[in-house]
Image (spheres, rainbow, N blue to C red):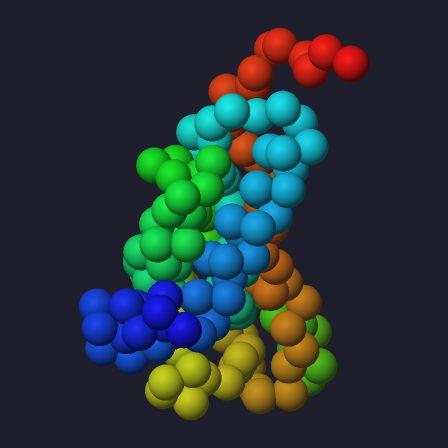
Length: 150
């Protein structure tokens, strides 16, 4: 509850989507670190699909808060955005749905009533075929070389 109040104070509203994502990243990487004798996490590389509609800036901010007092404190969260892909059931087009320029502000699309229209025929009869993923690609860490004595 305190974390929610703190975030609300700094963000103005509680960005639950990004908060739950940040906490999940911290929990997942912490489990991996503990299982692999890691003493410090340096970097976490994640890829986020455009259709997750996650705001990268909010995610970075909330990640810093969630990572405090964990092995991830002071680690760097690197985010790469994977473009959204659609398939048009009318003309058969398969590919990117919006331009690279629009991808930079993709997290705003739900606010303006986004529909995945086909860039070839302008049909709304489309299916999302890519860009929904959120993956931790890899972790850069310092490993404690000493193994526990039994």
